[in-house]
Image 1 (cartoon, rainbow, N blue to C red):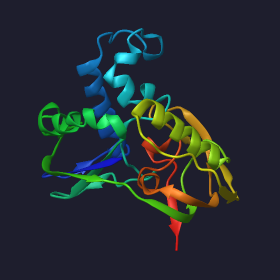
Image 2 (image 1 turned 90 degrees about the vertical axis):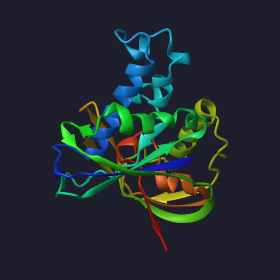
Image 3 (image 1 turned 180 degrees about the vertical axis):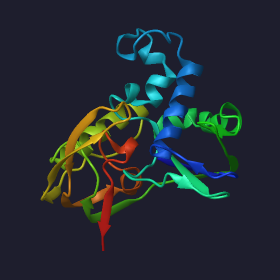
Image 4 (image 1 turned 135 degrees about the horizontal axis):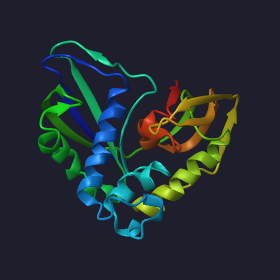
Length: 230
């Protein structure tokens, strides 16, 4: 897994009505679709070009599954910035999707034309880091996952990552969990999604990647965040 950190600043300040990281991510996906889709009038799930479509892969089947490139976000993000304040956008890039990482630089340097939703910004820097470490951890799930069965949540994600993004993560064989509570939130399509949080657990051999990226189908919008216990 690669984390590409993009630092921007707002010379005139900024005010967003929604999570600014999800606003940027939606615009980023729109750019990838415009540049790569040859059947723009059709729906993704019926398009015969799915297997060769860059957008379909980057977006995790139009956000139906697990995106191969997404921006790390929390459920609640700062939306008001004073003059000169900065915003760091951490793009998570999985496996073979590093081949499409050039879209990130293209987005900020050319496509946006130094403006997001009409708000001027300066691109300050882009820094790339590789994440690769295994840890034994105890944790709390502090944002939404799709099931109380965390072993299933993580292993379903791993299976998809390995099959579609050519990663080599190993399935989690032992995971102890307890406690949970059901919650509802809105996704990027403004639909209700249902899931669980407040789950306490411990795992032997959890990739540090997942501590950074979050777990499950909602990680691209701030779901599946793990709070590590000492």
